[in-house]
Image 1 (cartoon, rainbow, N blue to C red):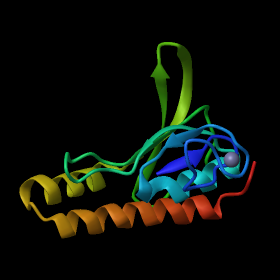
Image 2 (image 1 turned 180 degrees about the vertical axis):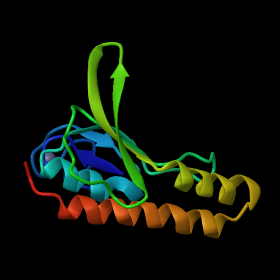
Image 3 (image 1 turned 90 degrees about the horizontal axis):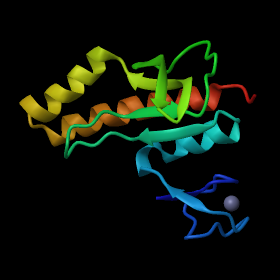
Length: 137
Ligand SMILES: [Zn+2]
């Protein structure tokens, strides 16, 4: 779905209905969390909701380093360097290894779409609850 780069409304067109700003594409499942984080001034740069079709785990990278006190259940916070042009460490949230392995197993070994989707939803719901509970900065 599309989200406004400025007011973070979801379901906008090529330009935001509300403020006429540019929009960006965001995966449906993770969109509510991305909206909350940005409205609370935790600026995100890249994200993925995870994909069963090519066994890809969800993640979020931020535009700078944030001193998160805790992390969502099933997730871990790491410092990473995004790209060469930005030679600074930024925060990122990735699935914990055991969850990533569990997801990978459900997709690649068990070939269970329902189980894979249930796992993905569990991780994304946990991320959303954490995003919801974060204080605005
Ligand atoms: Zn807008």
